[in-house]
Image (cartoon, rainbow, N blue to C red; front, side, top):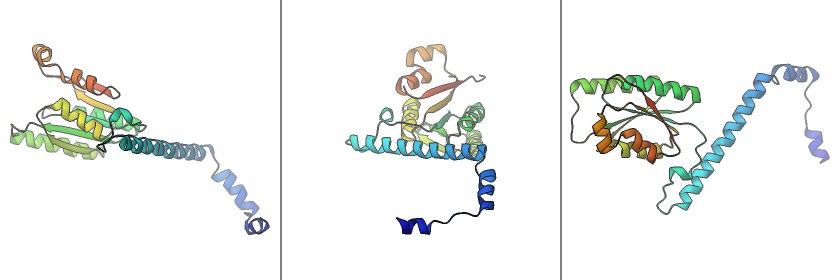
Length: 197
């Protein structure tokens, strides 16, 4: 023990004063606390995911079994012109929460995009990249199912969708996308952004 104490170096008095007045300031201590809290949150989330995977026989964790501490934002777009507005709104939400941004486009396998739609999708992808988001393009026939799969896969906590362009009859007969999402994504907030028709 004495050997250890003999090895300890004591800083000269001018360095102590510099540390007290330079480093141990309120803003630095707040930043350190924030870093420590984030580190603990990361460890809790990763441990929860690891335990959920161990409990599942197929190796995939269910979203409701995983403690999602960090916010993650998923914006669902289409080839409709209001998609740019949705991306901007989702990026704003992600910015407020310091969260990763994902932009999801679901393409119908039985329908090819027109040249105008392809250019529009490229514009959406560039805007997504401008906001440091990840652009996801999935082929699927059922948009609600694909959104749910993507939300679970990326452990999303916030979903941004546009107002439905279906008629009230179509919503009544087949159910609206929003109602299907809210039923399937019980622990995820769904934001509905009004759009012009």
